[in-house]
Length: 112
Image 1: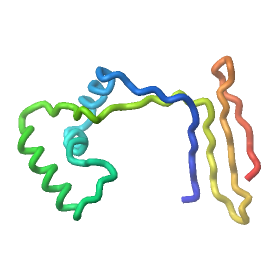
Image 2: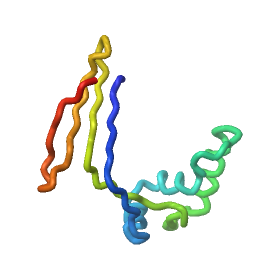
Image 3: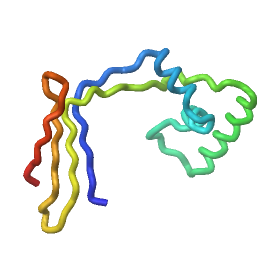
Image 4: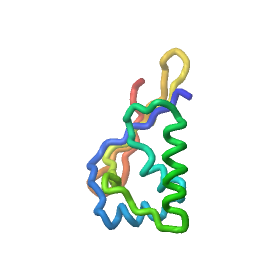
C-alpha cells in the first residue's frame, strides 16, 4: 500500500477506572480475546487460541467478563504526525503536522 503514519508525543497510562470503562465498552469477543492472548508468546497453533477462547466463553456465559489485571490503555498526546505515501522513483509524498504552542497545527511538506 506504500503508506505509513508516524505519531510522536507524550504518552500517559490511563487510570484503572478509565481502562475498565473502555474494556466494558468493547465487544464480548474482544474481551474474551484479552484473556486468551498472551501477546508475543509462542503458541503451537491457532487451535490453542480457539480452545482457550471457547473455554472462557463457556466460563463467562451470562456473566460480565472482568478486565485482566495486565490489561490497560494509554493515551497519546501527539506533538508531531507524519504521513508518508510512496510514489514512483522514490519521489514520495511526506507531510508533517506539528502542534504549535497555541494548540493549532502547522503543516509542512517534507522532502522524501
